[in-house]
Length: 84
Image 1 (cartoon, rainbow, N blue to C red):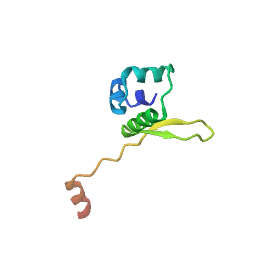
Image 2 (cartoon, one colour):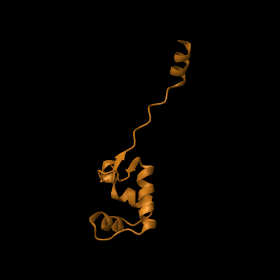
Image 3 (cartoon, rainbow, N blue to C red):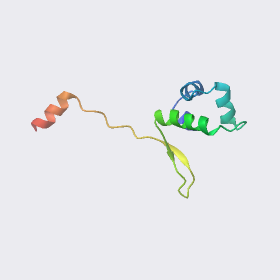
Image 4 (cartoon, one colour):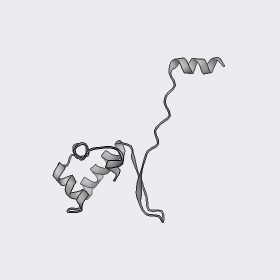
């Protein structure tokens, strides 16, 4: 779910987490469960891509996309705002 929300392919996630594509497919289909070390690598790769993991809070654990940072002002915009 998190991978799809990011528009990340299974191949991309597998490479970023250093697992094989077949292994990732097995995890996603529920055929296998990842070892803690592999789970940490998958989580780190997803977090680097902008996924936030939400802890259990009565409504269940989940994920959401990190808010994008507001666009940075250009030098010209900064100078113009200082002139006002």
